[in-house]
Image 1: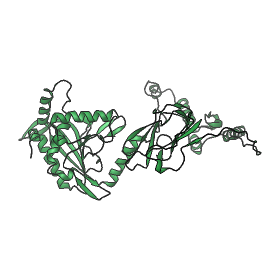
Image 2: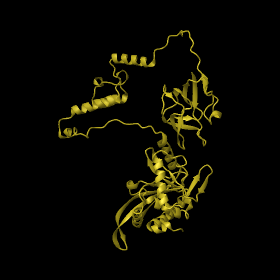
Image 3: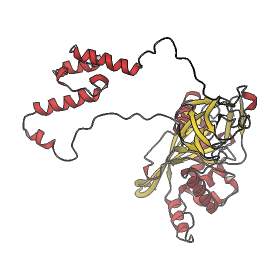
Image 4: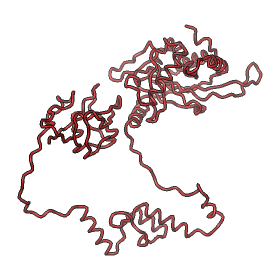
Length: 434
């Protein structure tokens, strides 16, 4: 039998550590070579790690949410082969001097240790609890004692489910509920409390922030901390745009992607940003340089089971309206299914975000760093408005935008949104250059 130590591989692009998202194997389990044994995540992407050998899992390092440095021990196998692989995973050999495989010596007889072995800690704890119980002392935390005193409950009459009969918070909650029920008189209110669906709910749920959610949290925190956001909201009359959208959708072949407002918005952006390049830019913090982009690589904020992701529609300026609709559909479905690659989720130059029917009246979207701007699409609804001195019904939609005020002045931001408004309110101009 041989032990094989597998270390955290170098996942490239300067990665120095990775987060354990999930283990798909456990200690004692037999694993086949190339079987997916773990999922790890860097700041760039999630990666499945296959087993390098066939064998039994001896130990694993860390649990979900733990960070493991490149070159550190990740998992240890016990293999049947006579010779063990002596090299660490590709890319990490230069990072570690610890041998990764060593033969397990045959067991040898040893003289018993002269000193008596101490009793296991768990046994000692149980014995202490038994002594305390015999002495008549109630085991409970100070907080539980204080709460019981305030409620007039004798803890000696409460059954404890913790170690050695210790009274837990749940035990006290149950006792409090019981006391309250006994104290209540049969009034109309108490009768209503027995109606199905009106039972009290207690307890909490703790959810560890790991994986994609941790990356999202960190990036949003960094964006709000480092970027002084300037918000600008404008009202758009999309009555004519809605008429054109419905007309074009009625002519689409079966199976084609339906035209939402997003293809029109991105097509209009491609024209407008030619005059406002400072809004289609990145800020490179390491070089202290603003990078203006000529192409439009539009990020499309997409809600997925793993959280918000931003797949990219590349070179939107070169796509027709129908091609934009198909590409938006494709990248969004790829993100939702978890099949998006690192390249699919990086490189956007400006982001568009929409909550669809949940769009609300106004929002304050957070910039997707290192970009300079983000545009939020709110809900389109019919409202009475005044046109030419008369009240009429028009379809109105707000655009909520945020800009990096370090590099985009308020005037330029407002002028860009006004230019976008003009294109959307007169949709024929979306397809005209200049």
